[in-house]
Image (cartoon, rainbow, N blue to C red; front, side, top):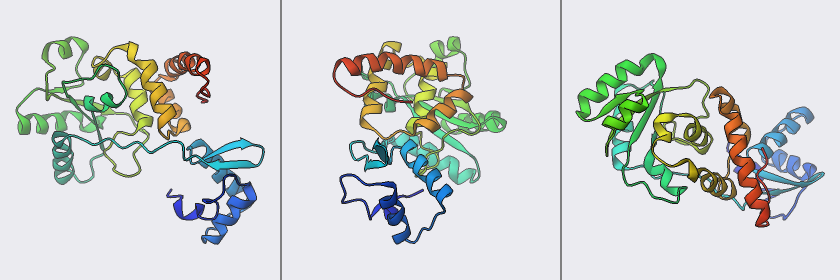
Length: 249
């Protein structure tokens, strides 16, 4: 949901109440019953659109920014071609170049990962292999990856159902999906050292707006909830020592 038009009535306030926010919605032409409004309020807090300071006191979370990755020309070309050829195909593209916004040791070898619906995996692998005539791998094992992965490789992986889809560009990898994949998918984990996790999570959660409910829901589907909680627990110890509020899930 695009909240901008409904927040105009509180945008100039340092803090505001539930009543202020509800009136802002009404003034913008969106009338909600009490239960629906309370659900909307909870959703806005969860999605980091607003921040709860204390009982019935909120503020716009302007300290964090939306994450947008600038994809390489190669990734855009693959996405454009796939969408032109298969209009109704659901797919998401991740590339190792995205990791460079978060890791300490930059990754020079860009590899493109194409997540597609499991039923379409073999067919999409075939068409990509025939089109690009380079190292295109389908759901490879770590042994195969270590032997054949190279600069410009395309790796085709199954797309888990009910993943957190990007709201602006359907094939973009958002942070809610990104941070689950980097702790659960061996094909991506091979690209960087696990020692990068604390910096990655700290930088992302302090800098960007992340829908933590969506992230953890997807983490449970990928059996990665425990690993993410463990990493964030370690990150929080460091944040608190440096006077930074801990990450709350």
